[in-house]
Image (cartoon, rainbow, N blue to C red; front, top):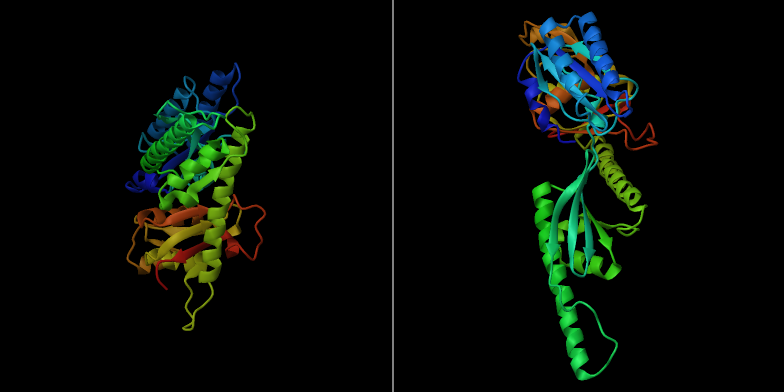
Length: 372
């Protein structure tokens, strides 16, 4: 998951208020329920020691959801009386809304709730053109229309010379339209950064467009089993997106398993367990961080300083490194901070279910290294 959007959270020191609000239950009392939720979150933050200004900032932001609630929920990260980041959620928080006051922002749940699902473009293709729709974990929206040549587009059944000539024009029109759709789809993919191109339409039209796409996109193209008018199409799209997520994580797990085997010099290209990960984070060697949210090490305590590479398993280690101030934090949040600071990728292993213990990093935390 690309967590570059979290950079603002690590430009200021803590402590931080981290609040996850569930807005998925839509009833006639939704506004009142959100008001009660906002008050409950503020009380919980105050109980944990949050300052009054930050409590008020969170309360005001949560109250705003009463007027236009998100489909699933929203997260708020606040400090010093200001909400610094408020990303929408792609799925509701597990359990009830919750709030935490801690030295680091509680960003671990975002790996699940902000949506690892790939961005997809659904291309509704026919002989006359195509409509594009952008699908992501946050919903759908139109992404463009292609109107190709409108005449001639139908074959005839006669066999005289003039009709054969007409059919040749039909073939040329289809090929022209398929090329225009492919060009437009390629541009749309690049602008949206789409991971997946889902083709919907008759088999011939789908294939003609697919064949004209740049080779770099061929491995991103899949075809839906149902047509545009089918009520099962949405299920097709969500299944294809979920499969792409699982395939990608399976690939990263394969890389991790291969890299953690020592080479001829006894060095491994992957590590697992908090002590080894902390050392790699201090040395800026994290390339990809793998997190199993329910793993025992995810909530293990570590010690952090003001900078992202100031992390240790024992407080005295930071003192030796010259850090005068230190705080206790969760291992997953501390390692995510280090990963974001060094532009490392972060993957949640939760979408791979069931996951065999021998396939996962020990304790639920592991990383592929930039160098051994």
